Length: 443
Ligand code: HEM
Image 1: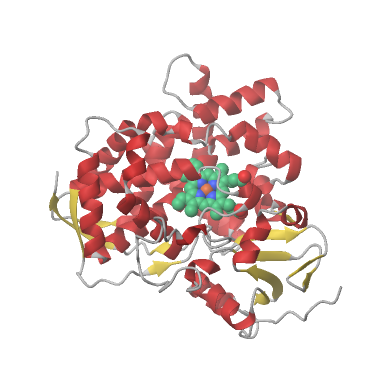
Image 2: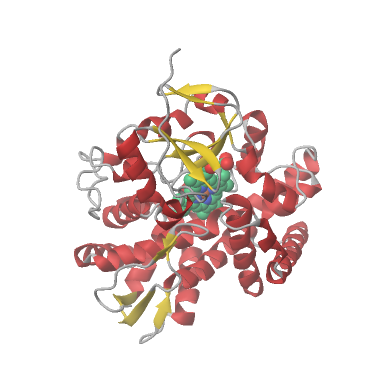
């Protein structure tokens, strides 16, 4: 088969494209796609990496060929080593991945949250009551990180442990920065603050496991399933893998959800007409005595705002993979062993799929428009075998949390014309400096 010469994106000497990528990753990949098409090469600190991007690349992840040609192992091996484990769900492929995913499926499913919506509300309230007081100007991302840690702790691990929140947050940020996205050098892991946080999270994992062995206690499907697998099939869930598995919800869910809901707060406050619709829906929702999952199905404004937030502020701009064998994509050759980026978020910003793409338009998702339903167009939770296992849980968690927040609080951007400051490490999202003003309680 004839193959095409793959264009190399122009960059700076030595650093290559690293600076442009770090500045605004979503825009960088869109610009490259527009200029070079669905396959190009980028240079990052002396190394060249192929990028496949756009709707076909997103779809490719879900095909048999995609599964055969790409693996995830290399990108998670640092985490596995650092924690002395043998494997972790996102870093496995094929049968080994399926085995782990089957063990964890129930724990990460909607079942883990569906009957506990009133608890999600109560946890949200106790976090809001602590810092979101009238007159306060609150750092949104930090506050959302604490709230999400509290929610995930309670819902997935059986108990929230406020005394560990700072350690979980710190260890997770180091893991994401150094071991997963590799935006910081390994030497950073010698930082005594990380070593302390890591030791505390290990202690927490031990406590979580010990607590589950005692009778009674709160439901924690994930941990119960992990411990059952460990008892019944220790080769599938050896003792060495328990700590990384029981604290997995934090690595997967803390930063992803915190950044997304912090972006949601900004986007909604920036669009008063959306704010009014979100508030009206939220007020109607909480006029009910108790919440059920069914109630969440009829929240078009809140769902639309969430989907629009995940389109325009994606936390996973690309998925990182290694080529398992030589293969050709759209006429371009990719060689075995190359580390590549799959630009699944590129179509989010293309007007062929989302007309007037930079407009925050929460009505795109309802039929007949349903713009996200076009093949390969919308992938905030990734694609293919590694598609986010917690996506339904995350949707529910984020919708309830945002509904509650906008029901209870009258929030303002500060100053009113504020334009979001953004950061890209470890995850793209609002900068820690993003603050909003609590003008008062609505309810
Ligand atoms: C805004 C919220 C979230 C977003 C946008 C998101 C996005 C993603 C993406 C893009 C992947 C695939 C990564 C890849 O293919 O390399 C992924 C995987 C995963 N996510 Fe999420 N995630 C979110 C929240 C959560 C939450 C709350 C949980 C659970 C607590 C969770 C659990 C997982 C797990 C376990 C995987 C690994 C799946 C596998 O490898 O088979 N995620 N997520």
